[in-house]
Length: 334
Ligand code: GLA
Image (cartoon, rainbow, N blue to C red; front, side):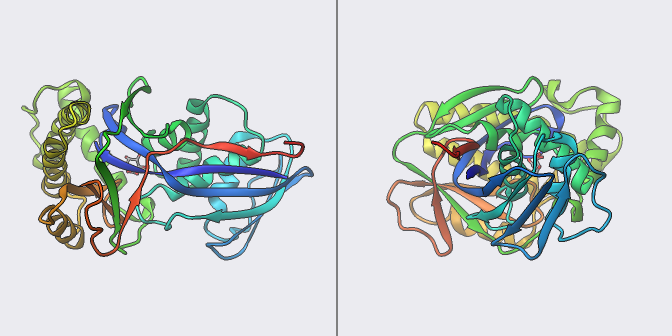
C-alpha cells in the first residue's frame, strides 16, 4: 500500500505576481489530498471521495480519448507528462474544499504524481504539477501553488522568488492565527479572466520590460495594462514589507498590508467580487483581526485573515496552520 499526501495552500500576500516572476508569501496548510492504493500494472485507476466517476488512464498510452470525469484531466496530464513506470489502483480523498482558492488542483496533481512513484526534488515535482495544470485546463499558471504544496515547512511561510524559485523561510510569529473563510463562490481557473490578465500583463511588459524589475509604473499607454502592472509592482513591494512585519512580530502592519493588497486586487487587477469585498470589509472590522484579503486567483474562492491567537472565530472561519509539503506517508514494508 502506498499513501501520498499533498497539502493545499493559503497565500498570505502576493497574488498575481508569480506569473510575472515576482514575490509571493504563501503557507502550505494542514488540509490536503491523499492518494492511497496499490502500485503496479499498466493502468492508473482512481476513485475520489469528493467527485464522481472512475478515472482510468493507461500508462505509456495515448491520453484517454473519452473525457471521463472532469478531475480525470489532472490525473491524465500527470501520467502523460510524468511518464510513470507503473500503474496504480486506489482512492483519492481530500480535506480541501474544491475550487475554493486553496489549490485543490495542485494538491491532486502532486499527490497523484507521488503515488505514481515520482522521484525528484520539490521544485521538480512542482514543475511537473504546473505543466500538468496547463496541459489539463489550458491555464499557464505561475509556480506558486505547486511549489508551496511541494515545499511547505511546518510553522513557516515561504517567501518565494518566482523568477529564480528560491525560497526564504519566514517563521510564523507566535500569537497570530491564520483564518480562512470560504466565500462559497466556486470557480476553476479556466472559467476566469486569468488568461486575460496574463495577456494584459504581457502587453504592459512589452512596453516597459519585466514588471518584477520596475520600481514604479509609468509610460504604459493602455489604461488596463497600466493598472494591471501597477498592481504587480506594488504587490511585490508589499510582499517584502509583509515578510519584514512578520519577522518583527508586527501583526498590525501585516494586517494593513493585507487590506491594501485586497484593494489593489479589487481596483487595479480587477479579480475580486462584491461578495469577497464584503467579507474582507467585515473581517477587517472585527475585533482581534489584523487584516484580510482574497487569496489566490480571486473571482470567488476564499478570503484569508490574520487574527490574534485565541480571538473568537468569525462565522464560517477555519484556522489553518503552516504545514509540511507533499510526501509519501506510507509504503509497503514501512
Ligand atoms: C492561481 C494560480 C497561481 C497564482 C494565483 C494568483 O492560484 O494557480 O499560479 O497566479 O492564482 O496569485
